[in-house]
Image (cartoon, rainbow, N blue to C red; front, side, top):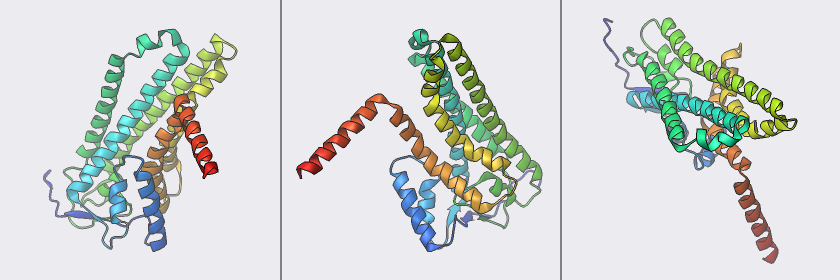
Length: 277
């Protein structure tokens, strides 16, 4: 190929989660309802193409989707590590919390998380941007999956698939390991400080742990499941692209005392209004 991009494919076709009209309708209602409450990268295209006979995305659109999926994913993992640092400071050094976690540090952490996500995404795209696509263009998914895209290239891709998987695995395993170590350190430190410190630390960490399980759970299952299945992959992809993004703010909202008080007040007002009517 002499390093040249000999692509003649102008678009990729999605097989989608299912060809059943009933399942497509349920997915449409499910995705639309959750999309109204979140900002997602893959959901808009899936909703748009669910009832279309030809479910396709342009070559440029596919590359753009992959870029933002990996950029946001890498950034999210960086932010989870930052939040673990925040919880560690709040539990282990409460008197110095405002000094350590000041606005300047927060801005630097946010910038570092986005830089990490962008570097990860650019590194992934560097493997595929010059690949030749000269025929097959069907993706067994509802969005542009990087590994499936690589397999469509008209060249040997085993080495590329390994490098892409290793890149994603490195940032995922690295982030997860840092989080687990931080939890252990926080719990051990809290237990040493006071008898009731451990239970308080567990309560403080519960929301963060729940989000970590939601983010890394599908990834861990995907990598360790011994029986590959495109249908199962689609289910977990939908869960990760839509439900996880919806549940993240919900979990933290329900942990906020002011928000819970406001929700209780609203519920009481609704009950009183119904009784009056």
